[in-house]
Amino acid sequence: MGKKIDEKQIHQLISGNVKRLRTLQKISQMDLSAVTGLTHNFINDIENCKKGISARTLAKLSNALNVEPYQFFLPEGMHKNDMMIYVKDFNDSLQKVVSDLTGQYLSKDKKGR
Image 1 (cartoon, rainbow, N blue to C red):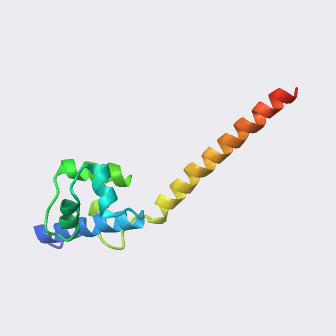
Image 2: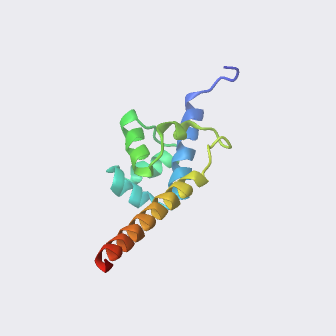
């Protein structure tokens, strides 16, 4: 490890990623608060680098934002691919539509026989 990292840099990294992941998914601080059970003020303080987070809070945020915990530690520019969130959502939606249509047409086919 060449460059020394201090606590403030880690707080900034996590804070920036919490906000980035939240806004990327178009989730307000209030909505994130409701899903995680954390207060709106606490989420605001995290995003503004006024509060650090515990492993428990990291788990709550990971689950609420549907991301892996390591994503809160990725430096700017190293995010795997922000579009993957949308690709996964689109894929899930497409699979549901195909399943629904398949079920509809298979049941019509059985009735028609």
